[in-house]
Amino acid sequence: MKQQANLIRAGQVIEHEGRRWTVLKQQIISPGKGGAFIQVEMRDLKSGNKTNERWRTADTVERLITDNKDFTYSYTDGTNIVLMDPETYEEHHIPVELLGDAAPFLQDQMTITVDLVEGEPVGLHLPPSVVLEVVEADPVVKGQTASSSYKPAKLSNGVKTMVPPFIEAGERIVVKTEDGSYMERSKG
Image (cartoon, rainbow, N blue to C red; front, side):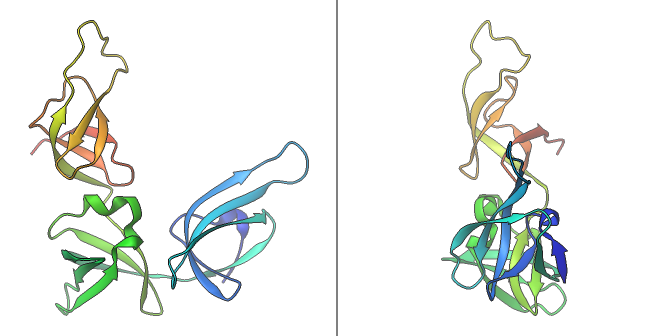
């Protein structure tokens, strides 16, 4: 399916120069002179190589239609994650690189949405947020105002993030799987 380059979004799969690519990031750049263009960071589905490509916003690209299917995360086996089809109980081994920076947020029995092109996995999506325990948090410096002074903390999955001053080690918090940022205290 043809689409204009300015409609490319992260997570889409496109065909370019005879190869399939998954879009990681996209940015529209408007230089002072000349027309705007779109800069796209993408990964080759077969080799895993990343590249950057630029198109004029009016150019067209071939977008591949993806099917979405939910799987249950079982475990990580070296460089693959093992997902189970909840309907057939069949196991699928998918390269962990498809998750990128979200890999540390995998949790047992988590539902993961897999994008498929002709049955081949091309993208993985975790739930938007997870609950994790804070294992280390810097003490609050006396005199710091509570306005916007977040402090560094380390989560139970090893990811470092910034939390409000009132969060202490041992507390459970909700974080975004997209970037590990603090959302709120866990109610559970």
